[in-house]
Length: 456
Image (cartoon, rainbow, N blue to C red; front, top):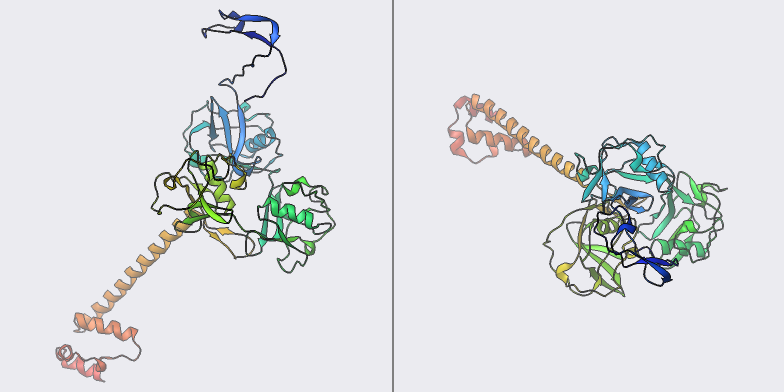
């Protein structure tokens, strides 16, 4: 766990009762007279603390999680503000906070909630040095987990191309999306872009800005030079962030040959269903061994579908057939693509298709609608559905009341139930009148004065 040490081993045959105040007070503690090559011992104490951001696509964005008392847990957003978020970003060497809480950004966690009512001054070196409620004491649920984006968080996307793997190159940095200048940009740099986005080899560089349109906001990267071995664009050499001599007429665009190698299939929309990977020209599934919410969040984010909704249990989707490509997937939640997560070698598993992974994401991905994939928040869609139903019910009630009012008016003139129906028909069918009706029995029942009025 902690790696090998080159230091000599000075003690062995150690056996303690557990109540000793010092290791040397243990009864069978013996000191080596001559150092040997025995394996050294490592320990982790319950007061060992760690901090991380999980589920946000990088180590500098995501849900705030603390390792305490042997397990990872979250932080409640009661009293949380930008000072607290700045302490998190500073502790992780991720700059400063550009957003201090983004509800639903990383999906919902489970397990411990370690801290509540956190109040930092902003000068603390560690989050646990801030004032807060005692460890583990809270009145929150995981709907209130804190999420943070720091200024050093970086993302990349292609927009306005109609598919995920082509379009204008945009980079998220320092809290906003910006573009990349085509000056000095060659096929080597474009290949790095396609590789980072897992879009296969480069198809073409696009120098005509009219194809994907001009961007807006900052131009983040200029004078770039890559060696082709980089896994991310910001590992290449370029001028300092935001320094350039370009304008948006020189925004870079690329087209990569590949498209997404991941999909969900068989659900109610294109952001829910069985997780499938394309490998060796064949779509296969993922086994649920070790699968958890962090893995599901990576899938939803890669598909442009928001965050994962935790939906354990069986599914009504029929079992799949064919290959099972992945097993024992273990994502931290910061990965941009499922293929970046730890897992068994492709195709090696001990599962059957009853263990296929399914996900339900918070959004619905809509391609071809302009600058980027758009997804509608699950709660928003639910609210809109309720609103539409309420509107429909209200219209039905109004229509019935209007009909009843007209019926009462007609009954006051001697009309019966059937005459009210005829009046409704007369309103809805142009040119209709009672002279065209063939119900002579009904007309014969009318007072003579009313029949004369109708005929006139």
